Amino acid sequence: MKIVELCDKSYKDVLNNLLKRDIEDFYEIDKNIIAILRNVKDFKDKALYDYTFKFDGVKIDNIKVTEDEVKEALDTVDNQFLDILKKAKYNIERFHKRQIEKSWIEHEKKGIILGQLIRPLDRVGIYVPGGTASYPSSVLMNSIPAMIAGVKSIAMVTPPDKRGKVNPNILAAAYIAGIDEIYKVGGAQAIGALAYGTETIKQVQKIVGPGNIYVARAKKEVFGIVDIDMIAGPSEICIIADKNSNPRYIAADLLSQAEHDQFAFLVLFTNSIDLAESVKKEVIKQLDKLERKEIAEKSIGNNGYIFIVDSIDKAIEISNEIAPEHLEIMVDNPFGLISRIKNAGAVFLGSFTPEPVGDYFAGPNHTLPTSGTAKFSSPLGVYDFVKKTSLIYYTKESLKEIKDDVIYFSKIEGLTAHGNSIRVRFE
Image (tube, rainbow, N blue to C red; front, side):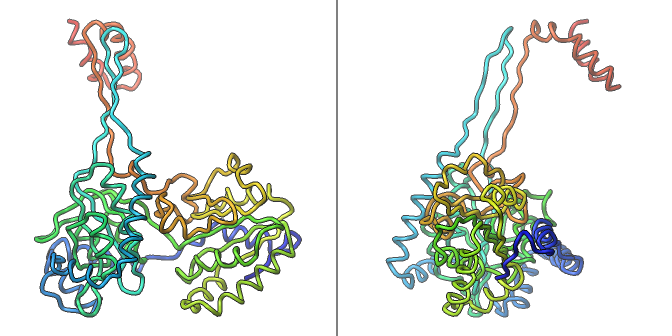
Protein backbone atom coordinates (compact mmCIF):
# COMPACT_ATOMS: atom_id res chain seq x y z
CA MET A 1 0.00 0.00 0.00
CA LYS A 2 1.13 3.53 -0.71
CA ILE A 3 1.68 5.82 2.30
CA VAL A 4 0.88 9.46 1.57
CA GLU A 5 1.75 12.24 4.05
CA LEU A 6 0.31 15.74 4.26
CA CYS A 7 3.66 17.22 3.31
CA ASP A 8 3.88 15.16 0.10
CA LYS A 9 3.39 17.11 -3.12
CA SER A 10 1.14 14.35 -4.44
CA TYR A 11 -1.18 14.42 -1.40
CA LYS A 12 -3.87 16.64 -2.91
CA ASP A 13 -3.72 14.96 -6.32
CA VAL A 14 -4.07 11.46 -4.86
CA LEU A 15 -6.89 12.57 -2.60
CA ASN A 16 -8.71 14.36 -5.42
CA ASN A 17 -8.50 11.23 -7.60
CA LEU A 18 -10.03 9.18 -4.80
CA LEU A 19 -12.79 11.73 -4.33
CA LYS A 20 -13.59 11.72 -8.06
CA ARG A 21 -13.71 7.91 -8.40
CA ASP A 22 -12.63 8.01 -12.06
CA ILE A 23 -15.60 7.17 -14.30
CA GLU A 24 -14.94 4.47 -16.88
CA ASP A 25 -16.10 4.87 -20.46
CA PHE A 26 -18.94 2.39 -20.86
CA TYR A 27 -19.81 3.21 -24.47
CA GLU A 28 -18.85 -0.16 -25.99
CA ILE A 29 -20.31 -2.13 -23.08
CA ASP A 30 -23.57 -0.21 -23.27
CA LYS A 31 -23.87 -0.90 -27.01
CA ASN A 32 -23.64 -4.63 -26.36
CA ILE A 33 -26.07 -4.44 -23.46
CA ILE A 34 -28.68 -2.55 -25.47
CA ALA A 35 -28.48 -5.24 -28.17
CA ILE A 36 -28.92 -8.01 -25.59
CA LEU A 37 -31.86 -6.27 -23.95
CA ARG A 38 -33.53 -5.68 -27.31
CA ASN A 39 -33.18 -9.35 -28.24
CA VAL A 40 -34.64 -10.47 -24.92
CA LYS A 41 -37.54 -8.07 -25.38
CA ASP A 42 -38.20 -9.33 -28.92
CA PHE A 43 -37.39 -13.05 -28.68
CA LYS A 44 -38.03 -13.68 -24.97
CA ASP A 45 -37.20 -17.24 -23.81
CA LYS A 46 -35.36 -18.09 -27.03
CA ALA A 47 -32.95 -15.23 -26.41
CA LEU A 48 -32.36 -16.44 -22.85
CA TYR A 49 -31.48 -19.96 -24.00
CA ASP A 50 -29.23 -18.63 -26.76
CA TYR A 51 -27.35 -16.26 -24.45
CA THR A 52 -27.00 -18.91 -21.75
CA PHE A 53 -25.28 -21.14 -24.29
CA LYS A 54 -23.15 -18.27 -25.61
CA PHE A 55 -22.02 -16.74 -22.30
CA ASP A 56 -22.30 -19.59 -19.79
CA GLY A 57 -21.27 -22.36 -22.16
CA VAL A 58 -24.16 -24.65 -21.35
CA LYS A 59 -27.28 -25.75 -23.20
CA ILE A 60 -30.23 -26.13 -20.85
CA ASP A 61 -33.73 -27.46 -21.46
CA ASN A 62 -35.55 -25.54 -18.74
CA ILE A 63 -34.50 -22.25 -17.17
CA LYS A 64 -36.75 -22.68 -14.15
CA VAL A 65 -35.20 -24.46 -11.16
CA THR A 66 -37.32 -27.44 -10.13
CA GLU A 67 -38.22 -28.63 -6.63
CA ASP A 68 -36.05 -31.69 -7.21
CA GLU A 69 -33.05 -29.48 -7.96
CA VAL A 70 -33.59 -27.58 -4.71
CA LYS A 71 -33.87 -30.85 -2.75
CA GLU A 72 -30.71 -32.14 -4.41
CA ALA A 73 -28.89 -28.94 -3.43
CA LEU A 74 -30.06 -29.18 0.18
CA ASP A 75 -28.70 -32.73 0.35
CA THR A 76 -25.25 -31.51 -0.68
CA VAL A 77 -25.04 -28.51 1.67
CA ASP A 78 -23.68 -29.32 5.12
CA ASN A 79 -25.98 -28.90 8.12
CA GLN A 80 -23.64 -26.42 9.77
CA PHE A 81 -24.07 -23.97 6.91
CA LEU A 82 -27.85 -24.44 6.94
CA ASP A 83 -27.85 -23.56 10.65
CA ILE A 84 -25.71 -20.50 9.98
CA LEU A 85 -28.12 -19.37 7.24
CA LYS A 86 -31.01 -19.66 9.70
CA LYS A 87 -29.17 -17.61 12.33
CA ALA A 88 -28.28 -14.95 9.77
CA LYS A 89 -31.88 -14.87 8.56
CA TYR A 90 -33.08 -14.28 12.13
CA ASN A 91 -30.67 -11.36 12.63
CA ILE A 92 -31.54 -9.79 9.28
CA GLU A 93 -35.28 -10.10 9.94
CA ARG A 94 -34.95 -8.66 13.44
CA PHE A 95 -33.10 -5.59 12.19
CA HIS A 96 -35.29 -4.92 9.16
CA LYS A 97 -38.59 -5.25 11.04
CA ARG A 98 -37.67 -1.96 12.72
CA GLN A 99 -37.93 -0.29 9.30
CA ILE A 100 -41.61 -1.08 8.77
CA GLU A 101 -43.67 2.03 8.05
CA LYS A 102 -47.42 2.23 8.56
CA SER A 103 -50.12 4.10 6.68
CA TRP A 104 -51.51 7.10 8.55
CA ILE A 105 -54.52 9.41 8.42
CA GLU A 106 -54.94 12.77 10.19
CA HIS A 107 -58.24 14.61 10.68
CA GLU A 108 -57.66 18.33 10.31
CA LYS A 109 -59.96 21.29 11.01
CA LYS A 110 -63.22 21.77 9.07
CA GLY A 111 -63.41 18.11 8.06
CA ILE A 112 -60.15 18.00 6.09
CA ILE A 113 -58.54 14.55 6.04
CA LEU A 114 -54.91 14.05 5.01
CA GLY A 115 -52.94 10.83 4.99
CA GLN A 116 -50.43 8.53 3.42
CA LEU A 117 -50.88 4.94 2.27
CA ILE A 118 -47.94 2.54 2.45
CA ARG A 119 -48.31 -0.33 -0.02
CA PRO A 120 -45.82 -3.09 -0.91
CA LEU A 121 -44.70 -3.67 -4.47
CA ASP A 122 -46.47 -6.61 -6.12
CA ARG A 123 -43.47 -8.34 -7.65
CA VAL A 124 -39.69 -8.01 -7.30
CA GLY A 125 -36.75 -9.59 -9.10
CA ILE A 126 -33.52 -10.50 -7.31
CA TYR A 127 -30.24 -10.95 -9.16
CA VAL A 128 -27.70 -13.22 -7.46
CA PRO A 129 -24.20 -13.69 -8.92
CA GLY A 130 -23.14 -17.27 -9.64
CA GLY A 131 -20.01 -19.15 -10.62
CA THR A 132 -16.83 -18.24 -8.73
CA ALA A 133 -18.52 -15.14 -7.28
CA SER A 134 -21.24 -17.03 -5.46
CA TYR A 135 -22.90 -15.04 -2.68
CA PRO A 136 -25.68 -16.81 -0.74
CA SER A 137 -25.59 -13.86 1.66
CA SER A 138 -26.98 -11.69 -1.14
CA VAL A 139 -30.02 -13.96 -1.36
CA LEU A 140 -30.89 -13.24 2.27
CA MET A 141 -30.02 -9.54 2.19
CA ASN A 142 -32.12 -8.82 -0.89
CA SER A 143 -35.14 -11.04 -0.25
CA ILE A 144 -35.79 -10.62 3.48
CA PRO A 145 -36.50 -6.85 3.40
CA ALA A 146 -38.86 -7.41 0.45
CA MET A 147 -40.76 -10.10 2.33
CA ILE A 148 -41.00 -7.95 5.46
CA ALA A 149 -42.34 -5.13 3.29
CA GLY A 150 -45.13 -7.46 2.15
CA VAL A 151 -43.98 -8.29 -1.39
CA LYS A 152 -45.91 -11.43 -2.34
CA SER A 153 -44.07 -12.43 -5.51
CA ILE A 154 -40.28 -12.70 -5.72
CA ALA A 155 -38.34 -14.09 -8.69
CA MET A 156 -34.66 -14.91 -8.31
CA VAL A 157 -32.27 -15.18 -11.25
CA THR A 158 -28.75 -16.57 -11.10
CA PRO A 159 -26.45 -17.97 -13.81
CA PRO A 160 -25.90 -21.73 -14.14
CA ASP A 161 -22.52 -23.44 -14.08
CA LYS A 162 -21.07 -25.47 -16.96
CA ARG A 163 -23.30 -28.41 -15.99
CA GLY A 164 -26.45 -26.31 -16.08
CA LYS A 165 -26.70 -26.35 -12.29
CA VAL A 166 -27.14 -23.53 -9.78
CA ASN A 167 -24.66 -23.26 -6.92
CA PRO A 168 -26.18 -25.39 -4.10
CA ASN A 169 -25.34 -22.81 -1.43
CA ILE A 170 -27.40 -20.23 -3.32
CA LEU A 171 -30.33 -22.63 -3.59
CA ALA A 172 -30.02 -23.43 0.11
CA ALA A 173 -30.14 -19.72 0.97
CA ALA A 174 -33.18 -19.28 -1.28
CA TYR A 175 -34.90 -22.19 0.47
CA ILE A 176 -34.16 -20.73 3.93
CA ALA A 177 -35.37 -17.31 2.77
CA GLY A 178 -38.59 -18.77 1.35
CA ILE A 179 -37.97 -18.11 -2.36
CA ASP A 180 -39.47 -20.79 -4.59
CA GLU A 181 -39.34 -19.06 -8.00
CA ILE A 182 -35.78 -19.38 -9.26
CA TYR A 183 -34.39 -19.18 -12.80
CA LYS A 184 -31.08 -20.35 -14.25
CA VAL A 185 -30.20 -17.25 -16.19
CA GLY A 186 -27.63 -14.52 -15.55
CA GLY A 187 -26.01 -11.45 -17.03
CA ALA A 188 -27.70 -8.60 -18.86
CA GLN A 189 -30.14 -11.09 -20.38
CA ALA A 190 -31.51 -11.93 -16.93
CA ILE A 191 -32.07 -8.25 -16.22
CA GLY A 192 -33.91 -7.95 -19.54
CA ALA A 193 -36.12 -10.92 -18.70
CA LEU A 194 -37.11 -9.41 -15.35
CA ALA A 195 -37.70 -5.97 -16.87
CA TYR A 196 -39.68 -6.99 -19.98
CA GLY A 197 -40.98 -10.44 -19.12
CA THR A 198 -40.76 -13.60 -21.24
CA GLU A 199 -42.97 -16.65 -21.78
CA THR A 200 -41.50 -18.17 -18.60
CA ILE A 201 -40.45 -15.19 -16.47
CA LYS A 202 -43.16 -12.73 -15.54
CA GLN A 203 -42.23 -9.03 -15.53
CA VAL A 204 -41.31 -7.48 -12.17
CA GLN A 205 -41.69 -3.96 -10.80
CA LYS A 206 -38.23 -3.67 -9.28
CA ILE A 207 -34.83 -5.35 -9.69
CA VAL A 208 -32.34 -5.59 -6.84
CA GLY A 209 -29.06 -7.37 -6.26
CA PRO A 210 -25.36 -7.12 -7.16
CA GLY A 211 -23.65 -8.22 -10.34
CA ASN A 212 -20.75 -7.55 -12.68
CA ILE A 213 -20.42 -4.48 -14.88
CA TYR A 214 -22.81 -5.95 -17.49
CA VAL A 215 -25.49 -6.51 -14.88
CA ALA A 216 -24.99 -3.04 -13.40
CA ARG A 217 -25.19 -1.30 -16.77
CA ALA A 218 -28.21 -3.38 -17.80
CA LYS A 219 -29.99 -2.31 -14.61
CA LYS A 220 -29.21 1.31 -15.46
CA GLU A 221 -30.60 0.80 -18.97
CA VAL A 222 -33.96 -0.65 -17.83
CA PHE A 223 -34.49 1.90 -15.06
CA GLY A 224 -37.76 3.68 -15.80
CA ILE A 225 -39.34 0.53 -17.17
CA VAL A 226 -38.79 -0.95 -13.73
CA ASP A 227 -37.27 0.45 -10.56
CA ILE A 228 -33.81 -0.64 -9.40
CA ASP A 229 -32.02 -0.57 -6.06
CA MET A 230 -28.78 1.11 -7.14
CA ILE A 231 -25.92 0.92 -9.61
CA ALA A 232 -23.18 -0.53 -7.46
CA GLY A 233 -19.52 0.14 -8.10
CA PRO A 234 -16.46 -1.70 -6.75
CA SER A 235 -16.33 -2.49 -3.04
CA GLU A 236 -14.96 0.22 -0.73
CA ILE A 237 -13.54 0.36 2.78
CA CYS A 238 -12.28 3.39 4.66
CA ILE A 239 -10.68 2.94 8.09
CA ILE A 240 -9.98 5.69 10.61
CA ALA A 241 -7.48 4.53 13.23
CA ASP A 242 -5.35 6.04 15.97
CA LYS A 243 -1.97 4.97 17.35
CA ASN A 244 -3.52 2.43 19.73
CA SER A 245 -5.17 0.40 16.96
CA ASN A 246 -4.02 -3.11 16.09
CA PRO A 247 -2.23 -3.14 12.70
CA ARG A 248 -3.04 -6.83 12.17
CA TYR A 249 -6.77 -6.13 12.46
CA ILE A 250 -6.57 -3.17 10.10
CA ALA A 251 -4.59 -5.09 7.47
CA ALA A 252 -7.01 -8.02 7.64
CA ASP A 253 -10.00 -5.72 7.21
CA LEU A 254 -8.46 -3.93 4.24
CA LEU A 255 -7.71 -7.26 2.58
CA SER A 256 -11.25 -8.49 3.23
CA GLN A 257 -12.38 -5.94 0.66
CA ALA A 258 -9.33 -6.19 -1.60
CA GLU A 259 -10.18 -9.81 -2.47
CA HIS A 260 -13.53 -8.74 -3.94
CA ASP A 261 -12.34 -6.94 -7.02
CA GLN A 262 -9.16 -5.56 -8.56
CA PHE A 263 -10.82 -2.13 -8.51
CA ALA A 264 -11.78 -2.26 -4.82
CA PHE A 265 -11.16 0.96 -2.91
CA LEU A 266 -9.00 0.62 0.25
CA VAL A 267 -8.07 3.61 2.41
CA LEU A 268 -6.67 4.03 5.90
CA PHE A 269 -6.52 7.40 7.65
CA THR A 270 -4.32 7.63 10.71
CA ASN A 271 -2.43 10.26 12.68
CA SER A 272 0.33 7.76 13.49
CA ILE A 273 3.21 7.16 11.07
CA ASP A 274 4.26 4.15 13.15
CA LEU A 275 0.82 2.56 12.72
CA ALA A 276 0.91 3.31 9.00
CA GLU A 277 4.24 1.52 8.57
CA SER A 278 3.07 -1.44 10.66
CA VAL A 279 -0.14 -1.79 8.64
CA LYS A 280 1.80 -1.68 5.38
CA LYS A 281 4.03 -4.54 6.58
CA GLU A 282 1.03 -6.54 7.81
CA VAL A 283 -0.77 -6.19 4.48
CA ILE A 284 2.25 -7.67 2.68
CA LYS A 285 2.54 -10.44 5.26
CA GLN A 286 -1.14 -11.42 5.19
CA LEU A 287 -1.44 -11.08 1.42
CA ASP A 288 0.68 -14.19 0.86
CA LYS A 289 -1.85 -16.32 2.75
CA LEU A 290 -4.89 -15.32 0.68
CA GLU A 291 -6.54 -17.69 -1.78
CA ARG A 292 -7.48 -14.68 -3.92
CA LYS A 293 -4.02 -13.13 -3.63
CA GLU A 294 -3.80 -12.08 -7.28
CA ILE A 295 -7.03 -10.07 -7.14
CA ALA A 296 -6.17 -8.50 -3.77
CA GLU A 297 -2.68 -7.58 -4.99
CA LYS A 298 -4.09 -5.75 -8.00
CA SER A 299 -6.62 -3.97 -5.81
CA ILE A 300 -3.92 -2.76 -3.43
CA GLY A 301 -1.80 -1.61 -6.35
CA ASN A 302 -4.68 0.25 -7.97
CA ASN A 303 -6.46 1.86 -5.02
CA GLY A 304 -4.69 1.04 -1.75
CA TYR A 305 -3.65 4.12 0.24
CA ILE A 306 -2.63 5.02 3.77
CA PHE A 307 -3.04 8.73 4.48
CA ILE A 308 -1.16 10.33 7.35
CA VAL A 309 -3.38 13.09 8.75
CA ASP A 310 -2.63 15.60 11.49
CA SER A 311 -5.72 14.65 13.49
CA ILE A 312 -8.65 12.25 13.66
CA ASP A 313 -10.86 15.29 13.04
CA LYS A 314 -9.22 15.72 9.64
CA ALA A 315 -9.75 12.03 8.90
CA ILE A 316 -13.48 12.38 9.57
CA GLU A 317 -13.67 15.48 7.38
CA ILE A 318 -12.08 13.68 4.43
CA SER A 319 -14.11 10.53 5.02
CA ASN A 320 -17.32 12.56 4.81
CA GLU A 321 -16.17 13.82 1.42
CA ILE A 322 -15.32 10.30 0.21
CA ALA A 323 -18.66 8.92 1.51
CA PRO A 324 -17.38 5.31 1.62
CA GLU A 325 -19.47 2.18 1.36
CA HIS A 326 -17.92 0.79 4.57
CA LEU A 327 -16.37 2.98 7.27
CA GLU A 328 -14.51 1.40 10.19
CA ILE A 329 -13.61 3.56 13.18
CA MET A 330 -10.83 2.13 15.34
CA VAL A 331 -10.11 4.75 17.98
CA ASP A 332 -10.27 4.79 21.79
CA ASN A 333 -13.84 6.13 21.86
CA PRO A 334 -15.54 5.45 18.51
CA PHE A 335 -18.98 6.36 19.88
CA GLY A 336 -17.74 9.89 20.49
CA LEU A 337 -17.35 10.35 16.72
CA ILE A 338 -20.78 9.13 15.58
CA SER A 339 -22.40 12.58 15.61
CA ARG A 340 -19.80 13.84 13.13
CA ILE A 341 -20.19 11.03 10.60
CA LYS A 342 -22.36 12.42 7.78
CA ASN A 343 -21.74 10.20 4.77
CA ALA A 344 -21.16 6.43 4.86
CA GLY A 345 -23.07 3.33 3.81
CA ALA A 346 -22.39 1.51 7.07
CA VAL A 347 -20.24 2.39 10.08
CA PHE A 348 -18.37 -0.29 12.04
CA LEU A 349 -17.38 0.82 15.53
CA GLY A 350 -14.39 -0.44 17.48
CA SER A 351 -11.67 -3.02 16.96
CA PHE A 352 -13.98 -6.02 17.22
CA THR A 353 -16.53 -5.04 14.57
CA PRO A 354 -14.83 -6.05 11.31
CA GLU A 355 -16.70 -5.31 8.10
CA PRO A 356 -17.46 -9.01 7.29
CA VAL A 357 -19.71 -9.14 10.37
CA GLY A 358 -21.99 -6.77 8.47
CA ASP A 359 -21.61 -8.72 5.24
CA TYR A 360 -23.05 -11.89 6.71
CA PHE A 361 -24.48 -11.81 10.15
CA ALA A 362 -25.11 -8.64 12.16
CA GLY A 363 -28.48 -7.85 10.55
CA PRO A 364 -28.13 -4.48 8.77
CA ASN A 365 -28.17 -4.80 5.01
CA HIS A 366 -24.92 -5.32 3.14
CA THR A 367 -26.28 -3.78 -0.07
CA LEU A 368 -24.77 -0.32 0.38
CA PRO A 369 -24.22 2.82 -1.71
CA THR A 370 -20.80 3.04 -3.40
CA SER A 371 -18.81 5.53 -5.49
CA GLY A 372 -19.66 8.45 -3.20
CA THR A 373 -23.42 7.94 -3.50
CA ALA A 374 -23.66 7.55 0.28
CA LYS A 375 -23.92 11.35 0.20
CA PHE A 376 -27.50 10.95 -1.00
CA SER A 377 -28.34 7.23 -0.86
CA SER A 378 -29.10 4.66 1.82
CA PRO A 379 -28.56 0.93 2.37
CA LEU A 380 -31.18 -1.39 0.91
CA GLY A 381 -34.12 -1.68 3.28
CA VAL A 382 -37.80 -2.42 3.73
CA TYR A 383 -38.52 1.12 2.51
CA ASP A 384 -37.17 0.16 -0.93
CA PHE A 385 -39.98 -2.34 -1.46
CA VAL A 386 -42.95 -0.11 -0.70
CA LYS A 387 -44.58 2.83 -2.42
CA LYS A 388 -46.42 5.72 -0.86
CA THR A 389 -49.69 7.31 -1.93
CA SER A 390 -51.07 10.58 -0.56
CA LEU A 391 -54.70 10.89 0.62
CA ILE A 392 -56.61 14.18 0.51
CA TYR A 393 -60.23 14.89 1.46
CA TYR A 394 -61.96 18.33 1.62
CA THR A 395 -65.55 19.18 2.47
CA LYS A 396 -67.41 21.94 0.65
CA GLU A 397 -66.93 24.19 3.66
CA SER A 398 -63.18 23.62 3.88
CA LEU A 399 -62.74 24.06 0.12
CA LYS A 400 -64.70 27.33 0.23
CA GLU A 401 -62.34 28.72 2.84
CA ILE A 402 -59.25 28.32 0.64
CA LYS A 403 -60.79 28.59 -2.83
CA ASP A 404 -59.64 32.15 -3.51
CA ASP A 405 -56.04 31.29 -2.60
CA VAL A 406 -56.00 28.28 -4.95
CA ILE A 407 -57.62 30.23 -7.80
CA TYR A 408 -55.09 33.05 -7.39
CA PHE A 409 -52.19 30.57 -7.28
CA SER A 410 -53.36 28.98 -10.55
CA LYS A 411 -53.62 32.43 -12.13
CA ILE A 412 -50.00 33.19 -11.19
CA GLU A 413 -48.91 29.97 -12.94
CA GLY A 414 -51.06 30.69 -15.99
CA LEU A 415 -53.15 27.55 -15.47
CA THR A 416 -56.62 29.04 -15.40
CA ALA A 417 -58.38 25.70 -15.91
CA HIS A 418 -56.94 24.67 -12.55
CA GLY A 419 -58.66 27.64 -10.97
CA ASN A 420 -61.86 26.94 -12.84
CA SER A 421 -62.10 23.44 -11.34
CA ILE A 422 -62.42 25.19 -7.97
CA ARG A 423 -64.68 28.01 -9.20
CA VAL A 424 -67.35 25.78 -10.82
CA ARG A 425 -68.08 24.18 -7.47
CA PHE A 426 -69.37 27.49 -6.09
CA GLU A 427 -71.29 28.93 -9.05
